[in-house]
Image 1: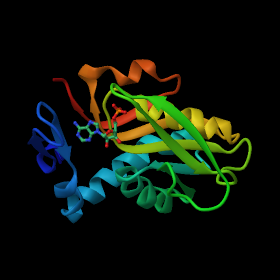
Image 2: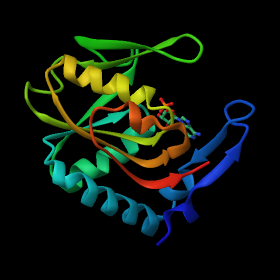
Image 3: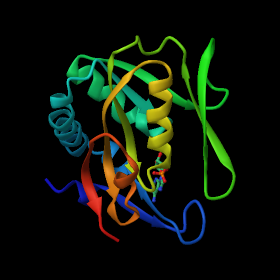
Length: 171
Ligand code: AMP
């Protein structure tokens, strides 16, 4: 099955000039979604994760079923102010301005092996910040995995861990 057949490119969303890769059509197609989760499971299992960390919000959709399948825990990396209790944050620069990701302080026991999940890697800024965040709470980041990689933005080059991706767009 070619998973690209189940991904929609929507031009000029959320702003002019951006081609948005919409995974709604993949999620809505049970056989395609099952295939995607199975392929991700095969790619991620060799890293022997204890915990999968999903990045808000589409990363949750990817990480939660995968965690069930692999028999690991699932934790959330969220935007600022969304998580209750004691949190740890990491701020990072965007093209214009800055952003902040947070995790619950006790989400990852020290030394646990974590694989980070998101729907898509573009510049890699979100993943880089999430890697630093998991390290701040003591986790060992074994790898990251995404459904989609925009290879022309070379986000992979800025990561110091292996990256797995199922679907690549070269331009
Ligand atoms: P980046 O930090 O540049 O790697 O951007 C990755 C984050 O932004 C991911 O959480 C994606 O969901 C979202 N994102 C960036 N570019 C796109 C795109 N062209 N289509 C869909 N989502 C995108």
